[in-house]
Image (cartoon, rainbow, N blue to C red; front, side):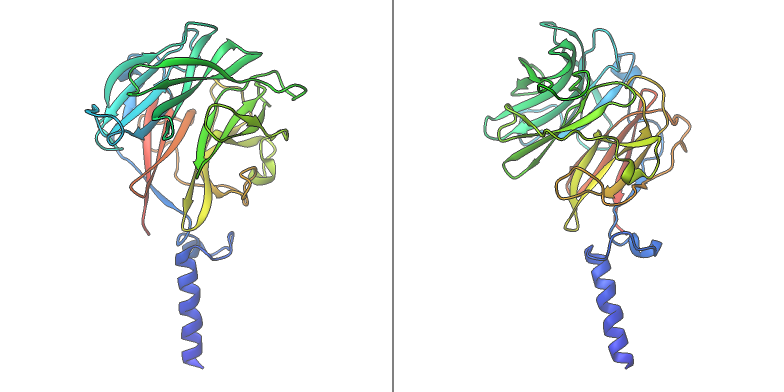
Length: 331
């Protein structure tokens, strides 16, 4: 009998480590075996609006470019923008480590053709076209404030493509299709945007096979209160990342009060398993760290992005124009 019990105990421990234990079980130590754990980078912010010389900071997001751009300034390039500025503008910083130090390059793009407030850059590498695709939002473009596209070979000089996402006919909302975040699985592209602005704006999912032509899922998405279990709090699909960890797909993003962009609000970074169709969370999100704990941090988290480099998950969060970093650690 003792031998049988030891075999059972070993089997259960192995399942927990492999990430196949039932999600949501209450043993805290057991959950740590398959939920990613994070450590906050101590010290000063890794980048700031003051360093960028932009007056405000929004959507700081790095990608790895060292193998894609000959003689790149660094292994990693990060794009960012102003935060609800009338003109807008997208800047670039570079580094050889995801943790920095990040060096300012300066402004690389502003759309002056139609509309204004060029912000929220989200850059993806298009392997088929050998181009960087930058999705950004532009006020006064399309029906309201819409997502546009620009392309580049080096991320320093961009070619405007123009309007990309506009509100489909009969879709609810005021036509705001900004805050576009894009993810890839094999040959399929998925994107999340808002679909109507304001404090209680809806969200939408988009699908593409090439990153240029997008089809909107006709089913609007709301704030996800079935997951947050809080009628006043929603989870973001754009200020977030999706990744596979130990065989399961996870959402990691911002929990916040219902509020329009550009206003002060209390937000927190959290993680949860996401459904196979990426439309809802499987459980109440779990906070990954406490905020504020560093001298420069505040509860006013304005944007958050997620990147995975060399098997490590990096969370870049912006509180009052200062960018901080948390990263995954093994347990």
